[in-house]
Image 1 (cartoon, rainbow, N blue to C red):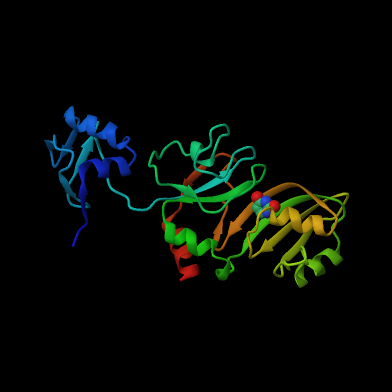
Image 2: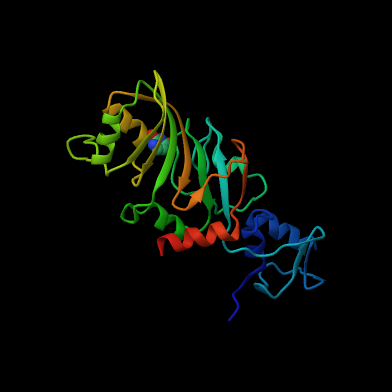
Length: 241
Ligand code: URA
């Protein structure tokens, strides 16, 4: 059976406005259902069958949405904040209220961030039990060595209670400022920065390149985003099922 829901919820979910704003629009006769003006905001809509129009555009109902953002430095991985700009402030084309970032990147970290309203997918990607690979690129102050590569591969002793899982460190540039990629399967607070601290080095630039099968689209400049393709979404869903 097709899902049905109230007209005001349908419009609010799709970001046409807040619940009270959309009620106002309905009362003013701005919304059409199947070609006729709808005045009753509690009227039931059959999702996928009834045609809802506002300002000359059809408002189709999407249960879940998925965006890939190239997070710029200086923006918080949160849904809202009184003072700082958040990643959701960058998503100007979708006004729906239920989107959130899947996990967090530090304020100064750039790169791949998935934004969705699919709680089950988010939960699966973040679950420590699933061991989802996350690849980072970093610039590190100090000479990263083969010894570091071995220590990361064995699993760094981070503190008395926490031994990090084995991680794949690859040296791209070995100099006073080194460049590396690192694949980790955990996602603890400041994890990459803390791992380098343990070997006496400092991360000065950090960017996430991938999460599971999802890779950052190189065409996205920091601050830019796009919807996931069907193929990307399919691979993500398969990866944790
Ligand atoms: N590790 C960090 O230290 N910071 C991030 O933002 C992500 C991983």
